[in-house]
Structures are given as structure tokens and as C-alpha cells.
Image (cartoon, rainbow, N blue to C red; front, side, top):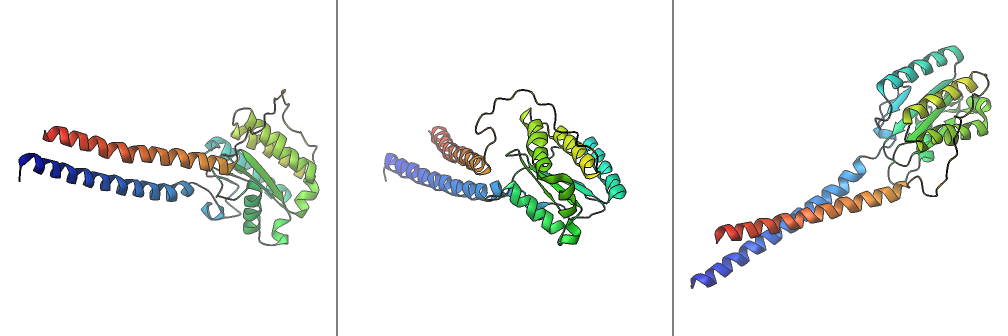
Length: 243
């Protein structure tokens, strides 16, 4: 066999192997990405086991400082001992696909407090830091004290305003805690923060599904580039080195 013909066959074989390697790598990274992206989402069963004596604030999003977490925990625990009304807050990094913060707060509330008697003096606030959406759920006794208007104001004007002013999650929880403690103890509602003029722009908060889709697209494109360029670069280096 002539040397140039042998070289062409060897080169073709190397190229075929590299193409197969690239396709295998691409399949692997796409598979990993499909499983890895949903893994960062938080659902009910991703939260710590509920202990009514120990769990007052759950922060899987790492949005609340240790100092403020300790402060809120101490405040809520003492408030529960004094009044019988219990307040808890949850901050998560990302909702499960297809879930809303309203559906999650209901799911957590009904799991932690399985019947009407257990629910009656309970108030739960949940915040999703990806969409910056929050929701509140209260039992019958607590809701009589809060009222629908105050509950809505806490979510939209207290939590929402602090987030719109620069993702101030710590301040949002502290201010919401102050209002909840005041109203649930029968005191006058201190009201939401003094709001500066805001320009409301539609779409300020990204929908979870839009963010998921955009993130997934970026990951897949990145994997495609790596899976394509690396084998090609390796091939050309190999051919050049061989020559």
C-alpha cells in the first residue's frame, strides 16, 4: 500500500473516531444538563424536616444573614410563647417547574400543619428569590387578626418594595416580621416602608419558566461549543503533530 494512501486512511479513521467522541460527549453533557438544572429547584421535600420547636426561618436561598436569621428566630419564638400566634418564614432559591409561590406556600402550610386546629394560629411567609415573588398563608385565627388587606400589603408593599429597591431580602423579612408581630399581637399596624416614587415597568420580575428556559438554552449552547471545538482542536493538533 502506498504511503500517501495509508496516511489518508489513518487520517480518516482518526477523524471518524474524533467525531464519534464529540457526539458521545455532546450526548453526555446534554443528559447531565437535563438532570442538573431541575436539581437546584426547591420543593416541599427539599426543606428541612419540620420541628415546631426549632424551625422558625428556613433559608435555602442563602438570602438572609446569620445575624438576622438568629434575630428573627428569637423574635418569633418569644412571640409564640407570649401570644400563642406563630410566625414562620421560608426563602428558597428557585421553584420547581410548573409550581408557583402561592401553590408552594399552601403545600408547605398544609404539610407542616395538617389540620384546622394546628393551622389556626399559624402564619407562613414564603419568598422565591429567583422570581422575587412572595406569598403568605394564615390559619383562621391568625387571618382574623391580619385581614386580607394587611396580608396583601405585607407581600406587595413590604416584601415587594424592599426587593424592588435592590433585592433587600434581609430588610424585607425584618420589616415583614415587625408588621406581623404588631398586628398579630393586637397592636396598630406600622404599615409598609415609606415608598419613594417608583416607575413600574412591566416584566420587572422574570417568570420562573422564562428564566428556566433562558438558563437551559445558555447551558446547552455552551456545552455544544465545548463538545464541538475541543475534539476539532484536538484533531488538528494531532494531525499537525503527526506531520
